[in-house]
Image (tube, rainbow, N blue to C red; front, side):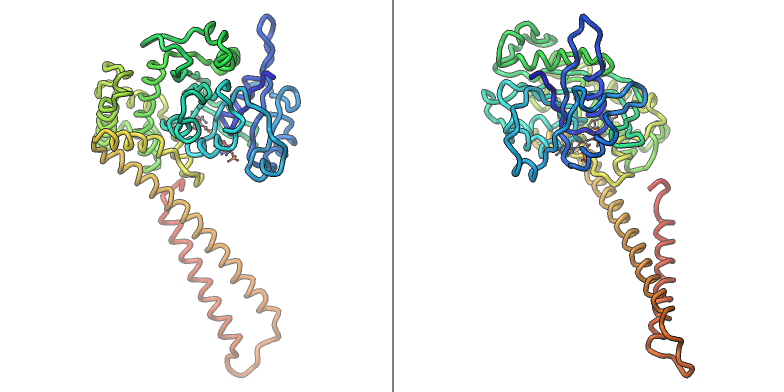
Length: 425
Ligand SMILES: NC(=O)c1ccc[n+]([C@@H]2O[C@H](COP(=O)([O-])OP(=O)(O)OC[C@H]3O[C@@H](n4cnc5c(N)ncnc54)[C@H](OP(=O)(O)O)[C@@H]3O)[C@@H](O)[C@H]2O)c1
């Protein structure tokens, strides 16, 4: 059956699912069926209640009308019947969750399946291939994509706000079954359609391209890699610095010390790329000129001046960041090529430290509130006790006074904690 499975029904996953399901007029083929792979039954129930995916700026994709869901977690998979083969899979989880998410569906993919990876950063493809399909002969077809769409969660998990209309660039990962025609060349779709091994690849790409709101375009592998590497460096500058300094993208532009850090992140990243043979072979020297890339970082910070970067938003919401696939990827390239990357390494550690601090503060805030509630409870219970004896303090009276002191100290500590938090944290 012509169906596309979407793994990771968050903001981007819902946008892709929705756009794939938008009705098309003849002579265009009807939209493909789409299945969302959700990990929790309660999310499937929430989608059921909403009746489908809602996107602020477009009509909704209605559940049951070519759009369905499967709950996909280890418990359900162990107890339920064997799930059918997946022809086409689009992975739209965050980079940090992609490996564990793909692991659950890997047995349903065959060499004739197609997997599209749509994560920010780099490194997911290498991890997935090495973990599940080290043998190229048994590997599904892979496509790597980057997107400039901006999507936020709306009123509900499946009610998204398409805040910025962008594009999706796709690059087909070369394989023994896809003829590599050289730099700047896109594989022939006619050839892909004729080979049973790559038919799903041709169909998946055509389905994505027909979803016109997505603005998908296919690029030659080297062009796609260059775009991905350039985006990686831009993200490696903007994401950690905005997350660490709790600032808008545009604020990076008017800060001389930060400009020096940005320059070093760029230089380290380009040195790593040019010292890695498989990347150097594809990288365009003009594109990876340090001054040009530095200007690119500045121009993106300028054009997104009022945005809060995705990493800053993740930290704000106490969600783990994609730093290991952005600056962390540059550090790993450096380690393999013998290039020092102290500033990128520092960014990784500082962002992780900031995340830990935020989550431990959340915890202490919760602990203090819980303790306060407990103390209040105890005091309320105390009020119900029989009246105090006239003469001298009883044990209960002393205990009550201690509780009041502890209560006051906790209030003070909580006030201090709040004062010490940067605004917006
Ligand atoms: N949003 C944007 O505007 C935007 C723009 C450009 C690029 N990107 C990139 O696109 C990727 C996705 O971003 P996003 O904003 O869509 O993230 P998101 O809203 O957090 O969505 C990720 C989804 O993946 C799901 N997930 C995680 N592990 C899973 C598993 N094992 N099985 C099934 N589902 C799983 C999560 O489910 P739960 O809800 O159950 O946790 C969540 O719904 C990221 O790499 C991001 O950097 C996003």
